[in-house]
Length: 144
Image (cartoon, rainbow, N blue to C red; front, side):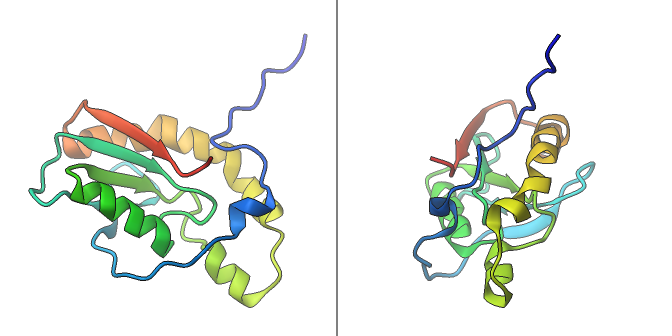
């Protein structure tokens, strides 16, 4: 009898996952905690502050603290969505680590992979439902 496959939010890391162009701008959302959730979330509200259409944004290896991801989430908020993104890296920021040392991104990200799925499935989605009393969800992942 073979073991059940491990469920992950993302596949193996490749070099394209940690390269790109840094954008400029001022994020409009905020980092905060939701009751019952042991990680920070980035939240960006639509102009009317509505919570009827919620977009769950699953960020790439840079996480929701990365400016590019925040600007992208803010764009969707401007289109009328409440955007919520979990920090499954628990405050660790790849961008900051890369400034200090030569980082093996796959090795750094590996310990977060399996727990991220459990975090999203068991705690993040229920916490968002409780916090915003909605059932209209849309999902977006920055992983190609």
